Image 1 (spheres, helix red, strand yellow):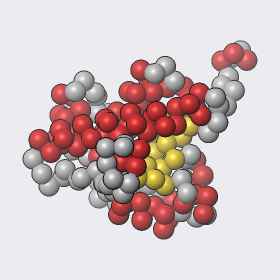
Image 2 (image 1 turned 45 degrees about the vertical axis):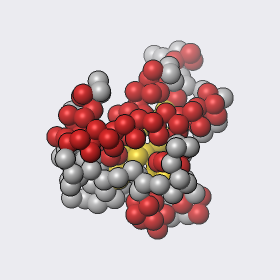
Image 3 (image 1 turned 180 degrees about the horizontal axis):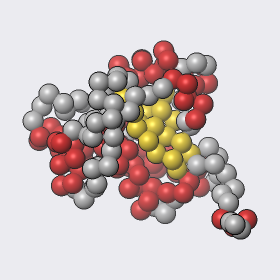
Length: 174
């Protein structure tokens, strides 16, 4: 039986990264952000996931170019399986991070309440190097080099996102 010290005092900050099919950008963001919180020693304060707005790839692994780009930088994306974002899961999340504006529009239209719609944000909003409404480009129809470029963009934006929310999460605010 767990002791009182084993029971978390607050629920983790729940974040989901969302792209089109959940096989390229959002799995990259999930894997990268999970590594960031692990390295910061706060993995127990975060629940990180990803999903797609479409159902085309549900149950499939990440695109092989995604897995290769991640592996080349020391990440493991091999266990990922694509899933579709379910609008009825909005209450489960504190933040829903869209990789481009089409995802942002779709997610906000799916949000059952105004509070849920307010949880939706763009990934690059947190990276000062990008304009406010910049998007992470979709590498799906590009070559493997574009996957490397997209991963580098996601790494930088994920660090910026973490630095934005980490102080509040450390203090126990979801």
